[in-house]
Length: 263
Image (tube, rainbow, N blue to C red):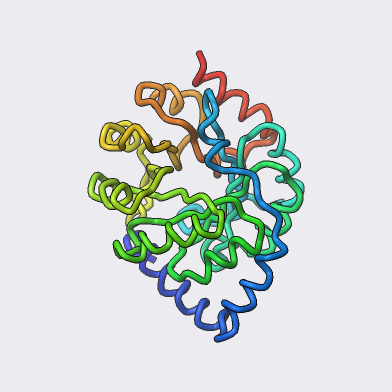
């Protein structure tokens, strides 16, 4: 598949799955379940703390890299992460990232730190489901949403007690995110049309993000070299997936990243 077609293909497949997955009764089912869901820990607070916040990602595969973690055990990974990162991102997209809703549900029940539902959200029912699965936060990608959708989805998430990480890739998307009242903005260093990565993207876009927003740098963070580049543009946190998934000692890798930021 041409890399430029990844995003379009992912969204087409997501929309197809949602038609098969949700019924006319889905909303009522979610509303019933929500009443018994415990209040999750605050994702916003975890990102707003002093120092560098780290979001560790539980990810089996990606469309650009294929299988990333062969010995993939979400619960074991959650145990490795829970004392060394500030939040967990759990992939639930099934076709291209080999994720699953059950991973988010089980991990959210196992850890006391916030969890992020990492998916391509294009339907409000996905937000209700994330709440039912125990997530603290949902990811909304500006590039795949219209302005009204983005605003409505942010408001719905807040109404459900969920934080929102709003992902952007350029200056125009930052403006749209801010206009939609985003308070946590994630700059994805990965171009979602070509899947190329450049950490300098965060540094280039940081000045366009208002001070009242928390800033998270996503993708392409492998070690101290990337952290040293990010230190020059104040950020609140980083989201790291592949580097953690490929390393043997998650705790040691997390310490390396923190030490590089604090040096």
